[in-house]
Image (cartoon, rainbow, N blue to C red):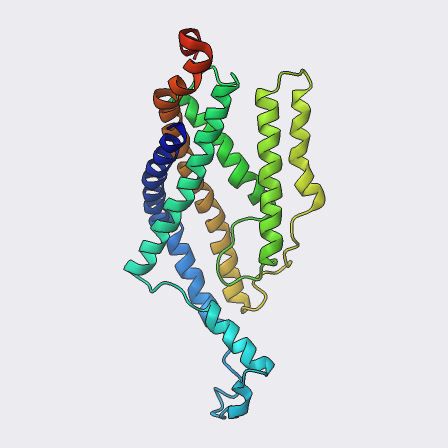
Length: 272
């Protein structure tokens, strides 16, 4: 019963929050992405011989040549939603699914805090603090080493970035949880975990990520990149404040009695 309730509320919270952040992205981040994609398409290199009108031999496209493999890989990775309704729909869907996952994490964390007696107060206002913590864990900490990127730049390998992101978020979550809910006077030492991912080092980024573009285009992309970092930071903080406040309200109204009453009865409920 409790698990189903948490999942259903997480789906609802994520749907509303995902729709809200999609509206913000429509005004703040998507115009920057579209502008960067213009430069990205401009820098695309045509296939050898295409501009000179030279035909490529038929045997070059056979399955056992490196060129054919590269063409096949490009075709597989080239699909993207069509501009307009399709692209907007996929964006909203992705935002909603992401928000649902984060809402589930928040509600599970709040439920665990209630169960173990770490949360003395919950509600939409205290949920804002949980939202700020989620923002710090899942956006700020990873972005300090791997800032948000726009199309058209050279980036580190995807797997390396994903692994470093997971490590950074995990260290930040453990550090904040230990410092906030620990009982020992030394609990603040948990914050030392925040430094671990940066001591290991984020995946190396090229010194000039827009080197493949002309000097004028590279300067424009650098300006777009800086704007994108701030726009993404703003949309993410709004997302986490929505998630935190809604999750705090749900935890106080629906989860508190279910979790607290079986163990502590009316006294536990009153203490919360």
